Length: 257
Image 1 (tube, rainbow, N blue to C red):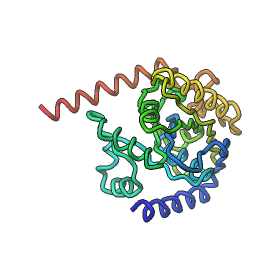
Image 2: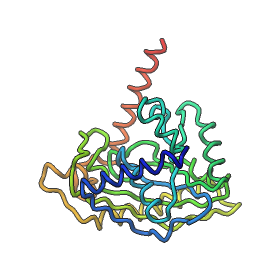
Image 3: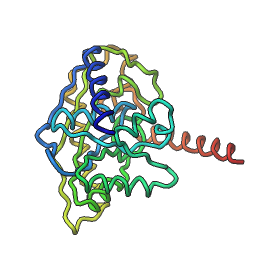
């Protein structure tokens, strides 16, 4: 099924990239394992990150990535069949164990599984706290972690901003770091710290070498505060996330009442 669905989706994405004349720069292609399982771990600044992080692995190493995504996407009448056809992995936020087991099995069978350890989009455009799931999966499956940083995707579609999917000539940077190989003695918490440190370096590099700048004072929203942008600080962004989570929980409780 994946072989029937994945190629047309890739072709459609490539056609869109060309039509919009996106300036995609993939750095670190040599770090993508050519064979065997790997946990691809990406930062999360846009709703489109799975496309570009996956494109980096595909373009660099001809590896298809099976991303873990919330099950809402799989229930959608259009995206659902496509997600299942590409063998992405549905995650129930109230019971993630089945998805975890499916991911480990996919890794053991030689697949690349994509994970966003921040769980949700970072409104501040800097790394949030990481969950340890990626490190635990890599350890259980006996595969490396592959850190990836994407940048520029937030200018097309991110949380709290209108979609600009027709925006042309946007630079997109994808940096693939060196694989992190685990040993039997490694603890998930410590591995997660190493992973976050490696991805911080990759993201800093992507941000500071990005070949574009805001067009004016009203266009600084896509830059993090520490680089002079008007994006919220990590602390303010986390407060907004907590408020949103509480509101969603209240709405869910009201529906179930």
